[in-house]
Structure formats: C-alpha cells, structure tokens
Image 1 (tube, rainbow, N blue to C red):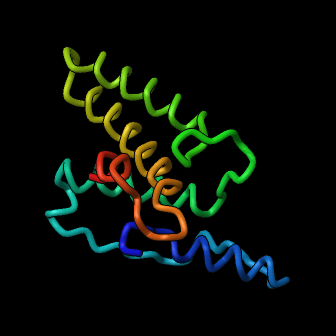
Image 2: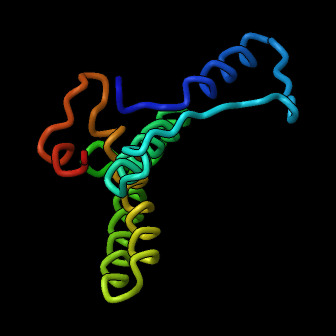
Length: 130
C-alpha cells in the first residue's frame, strides 16, 4: 500500500511483540534526502494524509461505534477540524496551512477504515483521498 509510511515503527513494534529489545541511540546519524518537490504544499498535505493512515493502521480502533465503517468520533473530529480550517480562510497562509495539515491527517485516519480489508474505499473514500 503506497499510502502508508512508518515501516520502521511497525517493524520495531513487531520485534518488541516477539520479545526483542529495542534501544534508542541518540548519537546515531540519520540522513534524510529532501528533494525540492517535497517542499510543495500539496506534497506536504498528501504526506500528512499518509501519516494519518499509518498512525491509525498501527492502532486500529475495533471497539467504537461506527458510522460508514469508521469510528463515529473520527467523523466528528474531521467535521470540527474542517470547520476550524474554514474559519482560517481569512487569516494568514501559515494558519490556513497548519489547519489544512490537521484536516489531511484526519482524512487519512478516517480513510483507513473506509478502505478496509477489500482495499476499496467507495464513494466516501474517493472524497477523502487526496
């Protein structure tokens, strides 16, 4: 699934579940190559969508009341966050962008449930996917 990220996080969780010990080495060098296209607003918003999908997939909520396959609280959060975004339309570009990042994260989290086991998200999924 190309919308997911966090392969290292998922691997470490599986290793810990299998009884392996995971350590953090703050002095270990890490290098991230960032190409100019990754500084584009659209790319960053789509990344936030992927972050939302990944974080939800790592901790799926199987207990909450559902609305259109996703936990009802996620729909409430998505609507409230979208309304906060709309309220920023007359504010600075930075405020709009920060609000949009939150909307895209929640879109990704919600989309995860719509996609389900069959890897088809339906009409609502097409509306949520960037």
